[in-house]
Image (cartoon, rainbow over all chains, first blue to last red):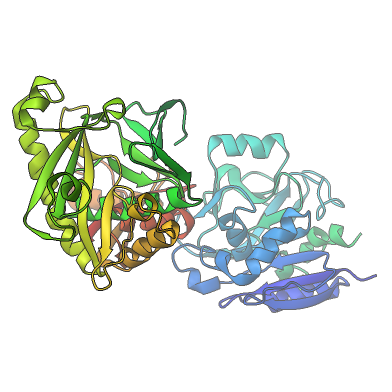
Length: 225
Length: 322
């Protein structure tokens, strides 16, 4: 049976259709869910909080979206073990909603960064990356101004101990580089229970070689096994 | 802030120590007592109402320059207060004759006194809180020096001058009330205890209906409804404040924008002068609240839930009138 994926849409979201395209291509049934809805569709296997600039990034990225009516349901869904994936602004929203630890800050260089970025797979014991090998290098675009992941020392140690760091930034040879100043060059994490995921790169924009990379397919494929 | 040890249990409240030696937690009980606890009862939810009413009144008094032991309302029943040593004198202010003034001296019930009266009672259950004069108080050592009695009287009259018009605005006649004072760790005399329908008499300005503990003393009934009425009336007495919230990245969190500005100032020749730059956000809110401390408490909640990201940011709040 096809996997059912709900894709959230806030005012200012702009990646919902790319995300829909990607997940449909991989065989999922998708439904876009407006932020004012108070109910999620039934029998869903995954919620994706897509990228964009929800609420114009006012105050802090993701800070206002977190209080949208649908987010109550998302929290409930996640707490009951449901899978949630936040991409870019979606990652920021999940952090603001305390579904993922840490916080997002302005990039070190203070610029909006938009480019293809190499990433290293740091962990494959999770839903999405189970088909990949640790240390493998993939390529996907990043496009953000507030993608610098911050977490305090205790939090960072927790991430390491529980293998919650899933992706880091690197160059094409796998050497660590840091485009935005993220602590330990972290690009993606999951929660302790391994059902909530957040990453700054856009796998949904890397699903056909004509786009510069099709590695996004491999980054999402684990979910369809 | 958590309750540690039960220090004292009175008729209306329990007092607990906290991890801060200069702060106590007062828990408001549902017990009702009268005639020096010879008559007892319980009224479910009364403590919650008294905590709420006292919070509003302490806020109003502190907005008007009266120093009180009130720090903040912690939850439904608990109030965080400054630690004081209670002066064992109940200070009573009367605007209208009733109660003991009528029984003892025969002044007709309901007569408006030409000038408010301040009375002292020795706070002592075993002796039925007897009325005393200044000389008694000094001789009994209830205060350290006689000037302190003057402070009690002046403060009590000021409280009356603030509260009488305050309650009049919502159709409540402030008949009389009891205050207790204490000395804080600097030896300063500040207002303590509670101010509620347990410690005040309120009559409705038009109907004359009693909306205080006399309903219990005189078996009129509807105690909780009356207390609720007092709360609801004063709750609408909101004033406009400006809440100025300053939000900064926490110490130790790299402020990239601050660093860039610091660098630019350096190239302008201020490198010797400027050691560090932190850039924050200022959010100015116009709020309606019962008092400054109410405005602050609510703004703090807004900061914690939305305005600041406390993982990376610190904030401070300034409340000004208008």
